[in-house]
Amino acid sequence: MSGSARTKRSLYMEWAKTRSQAKYNLATSGLIGVARAEFPLDLDELEITAPGNYGYAPLERRLAEHTGAPEECVVAAAGTSMANHLAMAALLDPGDEVLIEQPAYGPLLDVANYLGLRVKRLPRRFEARFAIGLEELQRAITTSTRLVVLTNLHNPSGAALSA
Image (cartoon, one colour):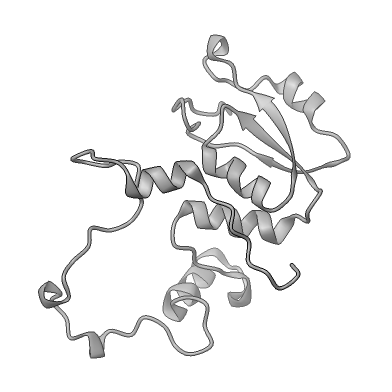
């Protein structure tokens, strides 16, 4: 980037996080707010992170141990949308081709567009119960395809990928 911040918005994420009036909002991934006075711990005793770390070091260390990955390769994200953004940003460059299912979870497309990727779509058809046609998938992947993005369970249909 040339020093200026990007200001593109995800209309879906903005609505899901700020506009819903649902009593039980299943579209959010955050925690219910708690007033500081109601918090059962002394905040001075609560270590969340240390200087220089990008996340909570004990969590990242434990994830590295659990997965066998080098600790410097572990990144904790504040939710799946952020994790998808970090993964695409790490793997792809502007202009790279990404194959994303259609229909798709809106923020996946938002991230791809934000990163300047060339989006190609893979249909998941209602009449096929949103299953992925293997031959159609093979045809869609070319030497230009750098990443294939699929959700399991499929969002928005809830259909599971078959083995």
